[in-house]
Length: 150
Image (cartoon, rainbow, N blue to C red; front, side, top):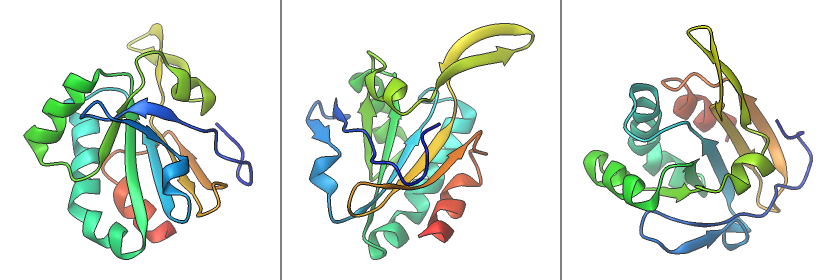
C-alpha cells in the first residue's frame, strides 16, 4: 500500500465507455480511488452499489469516485448498466495502476495461494496527494467510511 503524504501515481486507463481517463483531469477535486477484485461478485457489487447510493453526497463534497479492476471495458459497461452506477470504472487489464498503487498481492483462498487485487481505497486530495489509504477494506462499509473521511 502506498504511503499517506505521497504523490498519487498518474493513471491513464480506459473507462467503461472506452475513453482514456487520467488522474490529472481531476486536479482540484478530491478523488476516491478504489481498487476491487472483480465485477459482478457479491462484495464488489455491494461496494459499488454503496458508492452509487451515496454518490450525490460525494458530489456535494466536490469528490469523484473511481473504481478500478482488471476486468475489461465490456465487463465494466455491463456492470455499470446492470446496477446504474453513476461513476467511472477503469479497466486495468495490464495491471499498470494496480501495481503502481501496490494492490496486487498474494491472497489465500481456501488454503490456495493466488495473486489478486486486495480491496484497497485511496483518498487523493485536490493537489494529487494521498491523504488516506485503507487496505483490506470491508466492501459494505467502505462507501460510508469514505464519505466520513471527506
